[in-house]
Each structure stands twice: as C-alpha cells, then as structure tokens.
Image 1 (cartoon, rainbow, N blue to C red):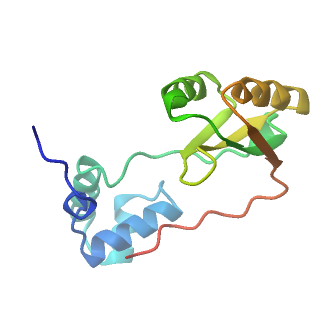
Image 2: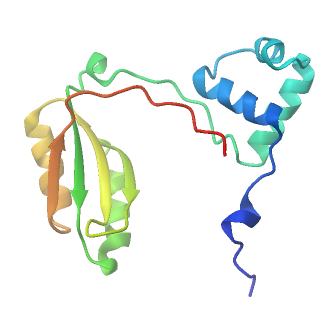
Length: 156
C-alpha cells in the first residue's frame, strides 16, 4: 500500500518569481511571455519555461474566459446549500455533473454537505434545478444580488 502524502508533502516549492508570475497570470491570463518577462525581469524563454513547469506540476490547472452570465441570458444566479447523507454523496456528485446549471459544487464541513453555484435563465429553471437536487435532502436557496471581483490567491 502506498502511504498517503500530507498536504505539506504535496506542496510545490515556489520562489518569489514563480509567485509573481502566478499573481500576474491570475489577473490577466492572456499576457504574452514577453509582457510577463518585462514585469518580472526575465526573458520570454525563461518565463515560458517557468510557466510550462508550473503547468506540468499542476500548479496552473488551466486557462479560462470569464463570461458575464447575464450577457448570455443567464439572469438568475443562486447558491444552494444541500444537506444529504454520506451514502448519497456519490449520487449527488453524479447528479451535479448532469446539471449544466450547476457551475460549481463545493463539499463542506458542518451541517450542510454541499454549496452549489447555479446560473439559470429564469426562476422556473431555478425551481427545476432546486427540486432536482432537493430529492437528495434539504436544500436552502439564496439569490445572489451582486458579485464582487475575485482576487488572485494570496501568497503564503
């Protein structure tokens, strides 16, 4: 049996330049290697090599576009806290992947088991999603009134 690694054993060692590159990429993932290099005083090839290493190590998990949900017709944003039994967690995870309206799912400690981020075009669609996940256990729904910009991860 392979011993399980602790969180500190899985942590990648990053120097100050790596951390600065990560901070820059979290603010604008479309910057060129040359632009990032100018900001961290490295050549474009050196920056590209560091970024590729961070990607291989799994520190950088991917790149994505931030889409305004309302601009694509998803006018309702809600969060749902779901309480279920431990035995139904695999069923819940499978259901979450089947529902495209669930854009993020977080497993929690405490009374609730999951926090779900949901985007729908209207209240009727939200009701269908809530009713679907509610079959797994009590669900509490809150509408998101406003969303504030996500900040880059802090440096430890």
